Amino acid sequence: MGRLLAFLLGVAGAVLGSQGPGFTLQYMQNLQGQITALESVVEEFDGNIAQYGYSREQALGECSTAAGLLDALCRTYVSAVKRYEVLVAHKAQLDAASDTVRPLVLARTQMSDITSSVYEEFKPAIPATTDGVIYAGGGFAVLWGGASFLFGLLGAMAGGGRRYA
Image (cartoon, rainbow, N blue to C red; front, top):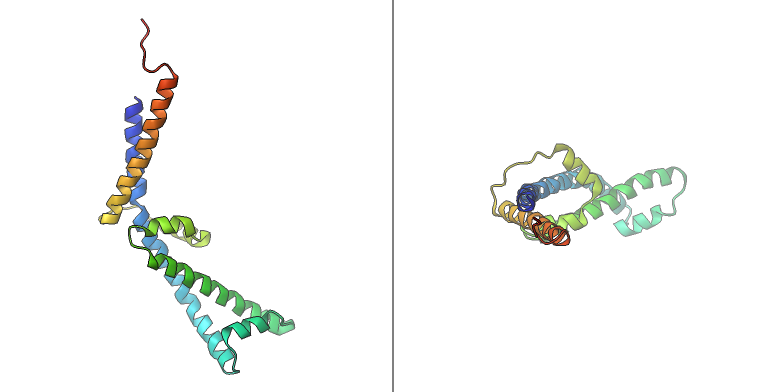
């Protein structure tokens, strides 16, 4: 019974693991969309401050000491610029990873708001890529191996399979 359950858990792991590359692709598409949406705001900010001879860093520094109406305007731009910079750095980190490693990098560095947005629209699919097959095999191996070990340990603790007459 334990072997069957371990095998079924392995199959579940394969199905779950195989979704990693597809989810990662959708995450990156969502991330790129957010970067694109903020790009025009950041370009407008950079263009406006350049007219006064400011660099982005100088303008953001001056915004930190702004008061009144200027503070209100700065807060919006500072927030947009900082978010844009974080998203661009995050995308660069994901782009630097190979297709096979990218889901693992994403698992460590994901941004919860983007992950939630992707989960809302994500539809599991059968993977047709090498990466999907690799992650399916990894998911199977992890859950099947873990369950086999656990059931073997429990079986040994319960008497090692000795039968009583």
